[in-house]
Length: 120
Image (cartoon, rainbow, N blue to C red; front, side):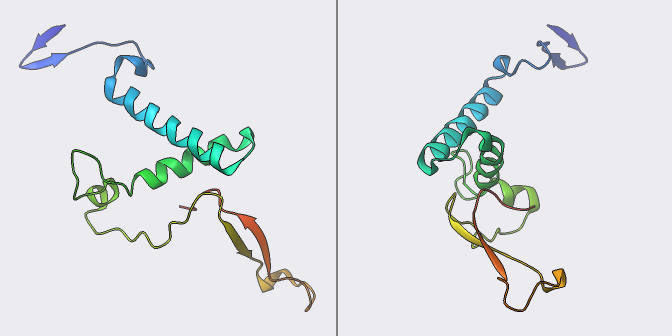
């Protein structure tokens, strides 16, 4: 450990989140959420990356124990966040098929899908 002009430098091994307690705790929290969501939804393991993105996205709308009145997204953007777009993981959704595709008049205008994440 070096002391230079009042700064305290602590050297760690690069890319070793195990040496950072906060990073380790965040990774465990995300992994627990992913494990729970995948078990509840019955998804195949090949969708793990989509599940991770959804868990991280929704955690930005959950307050932490340090700031009970402010969620991370509100702290970042400094405005109240609308959560009306959030839905349960793997909810049935319908994707709109645009009219520009020149399909026949009788073809379907939507496709039934499962909600795996949110478009940003």
